[in-house]
Length: 375
Image 1 (cartoon, one colour):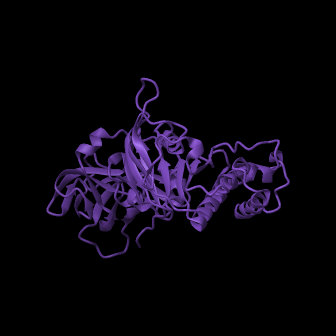
Image 2 (spheres, one colour):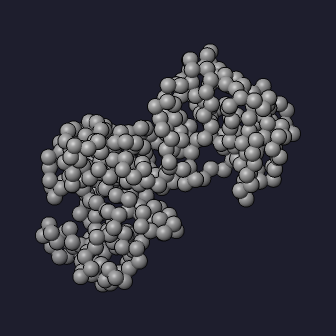
Image 3 (cartoon, rainbow, N blue to C red):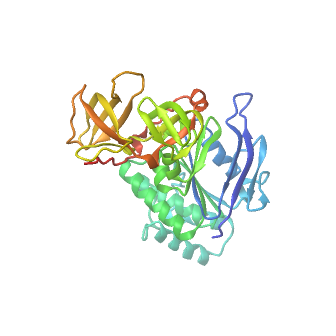
């Protein structure tokens, strides 16, 4: 299979006279890359995927596969394979007939169909299932057959529209690993639509976070955690610590103290962004100049960790931060303790971003991070 670049240029799609589902969306997917379109329901990610597939026509903008404009090309002529949320298999056909369907439509020789079908069933770990019927398969097996059917025609671009959302948690993880393994083996350019944060992070080379029909950030998964481009992105990826203050001369000052700026906005009013796991409790160590004295507000024991909410050492002011400490650390409300902010993980956003960004309802519990108490 060839590796194809996909370029989207100012794609816009309206449904009737309503608010646009996709607004001037532009991005480039490199050959052989697996990119996830991530976002909440109704954000425009599936509409974007369907435009790439040719199932939906954009009102404006262009879609290029390498240097070929396919914007007006019919779905049948586009070199794409697609797997939907539901398997959409033909119940009257055997599994082998379902997998080989695309080749039969292209009038390929039967010997070629049989050989490629057998190879595809092996690829999706369904050897020996060719003679079975759809009703004899589990949901995960049905999606494997759908994946084999999409790949057998050797598409330049593989499109996956929330193919795992109907599966239970264990099957989702197994299928996610299988999809990523196959994608890396064959090197096909892949676009994966999901609303599941953990799924996108674990499967993707890059993620496009889509909000209200626009790309909020397009980057490698780790960049969303270490260098979010807006408060909206930070919240979507589970950062609850957002502290207003001022940046000046390489230092950011807020109610909790002054911290060296590691990345982001460097001058003027801003918002300090730091994840819970990048704040640790300091016990039995020499004090560091950047250590912060705090008053414990609230404690929540969660089995594998203790979640703590704290205020600055004087106990006044509106600012507070949240951290996850060792489950053995069980302070009481009103206790004082010392925290250390990881200086390499402090990221500063300009203050004006905050007023523009409503809080996402997507929670970070999908993304599990381990926070170690410094001792």
